[in-house]
Image (cartoon, rainbow, N blue to C red):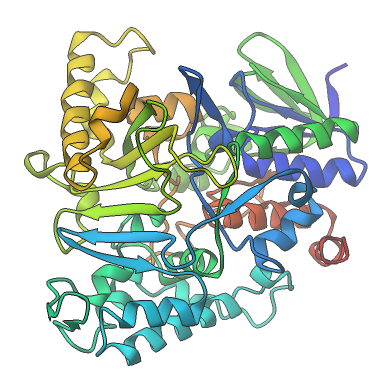
Length: 506
């Protein structure tokens, strides 16, 4: 009854997309998910009748014939879902103190809008746009093409931080808008949404470039919530004969002859000839016996650093009290966005990202607001061995104090927000870890390191026969990166050229 061709552990976007591909190819697929709701970071939750995103607040490259839309058309996601394009004149608004700068959609528009603030930086902006186009061309899968000349290493071994810091040709460009010297450099502005890739000085150039390229191409929100993506994929998988089972906390993976055996905490055993893990590689290897995994490989994966975690406020709003913002707002307390993940407590929060939920087309007022900032796991580590709802008064006091600080920071830019709040939920790195299963509540899983690109890259095909990885740790985090990663994983099983041709031809 529990025997399948392929078992996929975890139903994040990568796991669901792999399940879709392989079910469509005739494999008997079973996806096992520990939570009540499939979807990983696609999950949403409701409070006071309002729906909140847990991980996907906006996505890029979803315009006509852009990379994500071409992939998602194959998965049947472009027909049944609705998308709201963010403000083309500023899908992200980057603020440093009292100064604000727009990140516009379209490459000419992106440059011309920033030139209004940095008129002396035409050469730097041209170099920035040229470089991110070069990076995309070095990763052919972003254009649904087979890897060929392998130029990726030119960008995986370069620092995003150093590239951006060295861009600016003039230290203090004159601001046409305010007719005075800007206190902020173009380099800082271009790094102003580096929360999208964890804000680390170790981030490689290709990570920053591919993510930025996707959003400048076309930035969108999913109307009604990202859980609609997971629902669509689950429905398609089951319609093609696949199986998705929730409430299955996997505690052991071993092998008996030609079959893998997967055991859940409830005692159920599932068998298959192939396994794809969509959960964190370190977590995966920790539930496998020593003889299945080479010690050096296990040690390497266990030693990898994860990206920083987050502290999040989920705000339910009174009706008609706060405008819907068709953009994302990034605020920075200083002109340096690179040191914020390690911001000392006395100056926390060093930044915040504010985003309003998109629940219907042409929305006028916001029903929900999400405010995110960095938080190191060490701040909540003392409560690691506690469970949800049983962490004690000290934890509740900690959350309340941090929430008040973050809300006060946001209210300086949005003074009408506190009075519009009807209800507030608070998420710490522990919450995020419990909800998504990601170690330490990491924002984007394993931190890619330009010093050691091979060490910090997890290949989809392992040296364990018929055992594969997928998800944000294998290719690149983010919706587009995970989508491409799922194709690469399945390409290892059925042939990448064959699969890309099917995707391109519908």
